[in-house]
Image 1 (cartoon, rainbow, N blue to C red):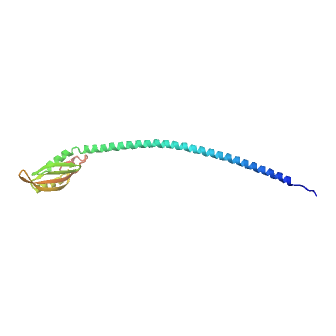
Image 2: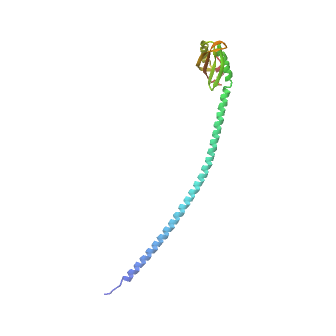
Image 3: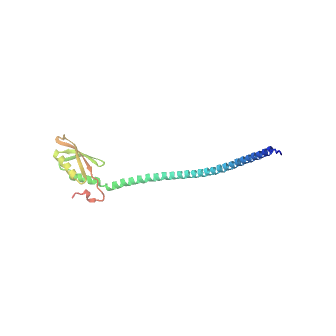
Amino acid sequence: MIRINLLPHREEKRKARRQQFYALVGLVTVLAGVIWFLGFSVINRQISAQDDKNEFLKREISSLDKEIAEIKKLKEQTDSLLARKRVIEALQANRSETVHLFNELAKQVPEGIYMRTMVQTGQRITITGYAQSNARITTLMNNLDESPLLERSTLVETKAEVVANRRLNAFSIITNISRQTTADPKAGKKP
């Protein structure tokens, strides 16, 4: 019988397989390194591109913020000018109001009433004075309520006083002005 020693042959096959394994591990390691490097490069490029986009957006946002601030400033100026315009229009519409008011008061004050003061605060007018009797104060209030320029007359107080050796009734009345519109020029006139 022939004896063949297969140990060296097996040993050589193992050695060849080991070398193939190490070569394959080395190749896989190099390939993994190349893939990692390529992935790292691609990701870095994408991050860099995104950073550039972000910087561009920040610049544009700051530019738009400046424009928004300018727009707000212009809007405030426009609102201010519109408010001034409304005030001027209101003054223009009611510029003859004082003349009409004094005219109307001259028409509505009955005999026996002596006005001391007249104070206007916004729409409200406070009238103080003396009357020969309470009936004349009532007549004055009725006349003021019937007036197209005045409305809602309210008696605040009435009291008896002696002025220059005469007994008179001191009074205080509050009445309101009804605003006239420029569209209706006959509104201030009584029919």
